[in-house]
Amino acid sequence: MALMITDECINCDVCEPECPNDAISMGLEIYVIDPSKCTECVGHFDEPQCRQVCPVECIPINPEHLETPAQLLEKYRALQAAKDSHASDGGTTA
Image (cartoon, rainbow, N blue to C red):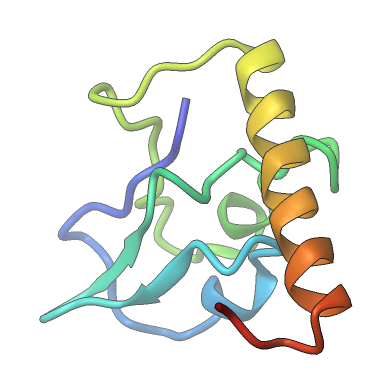
């Protein structure tokens, strides 16, 4: 279950630095969450950090990207493996 940011977002900038997977970025008008990187903080924290800091509560579950906790954990592991691989090759890609 990746999360999403609704148009109630006030662009306060507090969610982006909280995401351990770098899934949050500025979109055309509001912040957006890349569902391929969002694990709802599974593997990092007990609760999604962006939801914890959002002052307007505009970060619900994205109904187009429903995932089980096991799937989120697998996504976390794949993201970490990719990050570790990228770091071990000196940050270069072939």
